[in-house]
Amino acid sequence: MPQLPSFIQMYRELIAIPSVSCLDPSWDTSNKAIIEKLAGWLDLLGFQVAIHALKQPGKYNLLARYEPVGAQRGGLLLSGHTDTVPWDEGRWTQDPFKLHEADGRLYGLGSADMKGFFVFVLEALRHIDLKQLTKPLYILATADEETTMAGARELSAFPEFRPEYAVIGEPTSMTPVTTHKGHLTEAVRIIGQSGHSSNPAAGVNAIEIMHDVITELRIIKQEFQQRYHDAAFDVPYPTLNFGAIHGGDAANRICACCELHLDMRPLPGMNINELYGLIDHRLADIKTRYPGAISLVHMHEPIPGYRCQHDAEIVTIAQELTGNTAESANYCTEAPFVQDLGCETIVMGPGSIAQAHQPDEYIQISEIVPAQQQIEQLIRRVCAGQ
Image 1 (cartoon, helix red, strand yellow):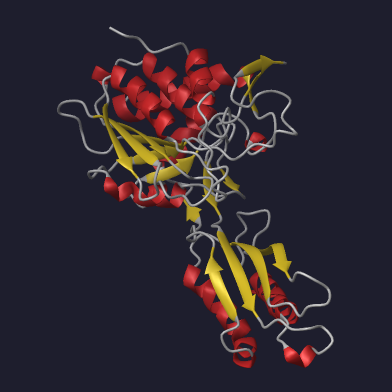
Image 2 (spheres, helix red, strand yellow; image 1 turned 90 degrees about the vertical axis):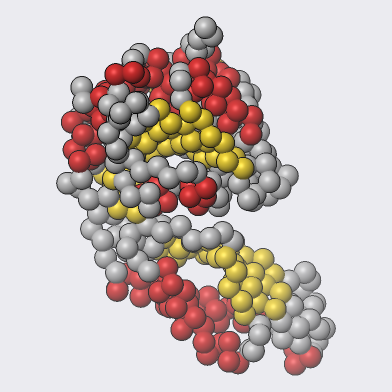
């Protein structure tokens, strides 16, 4: 009977498969090959594997199930995303698609964030007699976490499954993360009217309107600090960042179009529509002065904040197994979508978040054995009562 490749060989094969997720089509690639690779390995272990084609062409989710005969309900979901961010060739010192060992590290795109998590899970399963499980075990692999979270938004496409606990294996150095902010990326678009700069009255300058818009949005930033507070975060209020602005084409032309890209990070539990309402309220007077000139465009669908209660059973289990106290995080994950399945959900995996989206991404070799053992213990504890 065919056997799983070695830990290092599985790592090498996953890193070698490009699966970049990017809003720029010139970078974006399908994740089909990596999904098929994982499906083959999980099939060898006796899992029932289902692959779902997303609405977005070329993108796929995978759900693998091991449900012992007579198993109790609930069980454990181990979840991760198969995509990576693009890479900066000018800053990588070796091929990002070739696993490279040096200085006590394994280098490669996705080594930490987060193809490697699947290798840790598979290696743990190699050492477990799955027939001894008393509760279901599920492995979820998603697409496009790094951009739109399209995969996490289509979990309902799988036949109903209701795990009791879920662990999303983002690189947290095996520290359970129980809360993080949401993420909204918006474009404020101003359409004016071009004209010769010698006669300002002959046009409508989009840059000048944008100046008024930014003034109002800066007031919203102050309102965020005054109206909202969550002590779980180092930055305890929602944030609004002006990330990019584009407008005009020549000094002697009245600017007809200006666009601002902004990033908002709502606190867990905040109503997303309330944020949009704040923006609409602040911009109402400007919109009245310039009818039809201002529009707010969602660059991706909003991602809500997430929180798991500190006294949840999965938090207690994770802290006991790892010895690490639960923390909050500044980054965003698929946790709110997985949590919607009705399961206690944490974010916890091998590798450091400091390596995510970095050139020469790596995972420390010294982390491998402890993390692999903790994942194995987690599966045994939840699904076999050991």
